[in-house]
Length: 346
Figure 1 (tube, rainbow, N blue to C red):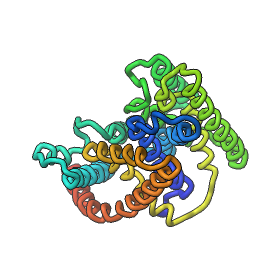
Figure 2 (figure 1 turned 30 degrees about the vertical axis):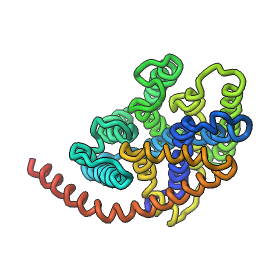
Figure 3 (figure 1 turned 120 degrees about the horizontal axis):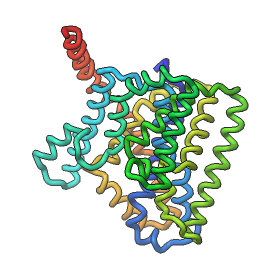
Figure 4 (figure 1 turned 90 degrees about the vertical axis):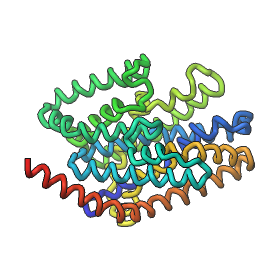
């Protein structure tokens, strides 16, 4: 708790809360009859919110890169137990929602890193944790010039060939390659960007505001009039514009300095916000009900209801994860001691 920086933890919380709105826009609204028939403000509101929220994956990984991922057996064990806990929990929730019991599904629920659909970020982040020692070792032995060369290569691969060229290596920013790309940027910012905090706060605030406003404006112009590209193009995480906005917002938060035990305590449970609502066992149920909600109530009211649901869900998960930790931490500690003894014997 003492090593946590409240400014970064606040950004982590904002990113996870923003994820709820992004998934609402991507998975619930496309199936809404009312939304398809709308125009004007209520048609553009979700788009404006999404222009603010489509940066959350990049920001989350920038945070990992900023501090560096220090891989240990306990870190891998903790990550597995957290994901397995919520996989099993959401499978049980799906049974309560009317799904038929299947022994195969029950077994799979204990294997959150399996090949089952869903949780793409979980699998990609696991790969990042496992390969972080290799990446960190390479970074430690790079000069600044060599690091810049690597970053240029990653920009070429991910944002030029990937985003513009739609090459299979990273066409949308939803895979391990994107996480590695952003992780290296985060490490570079931590190791080689040393600017006066006041100046950095001023300029990153200006760039962030202008960048996000322009992004939303161009997005609305394209969707309403130009129709030059598909709307989903603006959600691609390897979009150079999205990358710049993510970096500027992240750097702005690094300049803030304050301490809040409440924020630090809540932020510990941020990741499960993603794990629960995006679980393969219940995600369809969640999004179908959100779509029905949008088609049932007037536009102004439905947004108030959705906001209320998201806030209650968000805070509930943040608090509940401390209960989860009290269950899985003793198991993790026991497994870690066993792994340590096994390694020492060898």
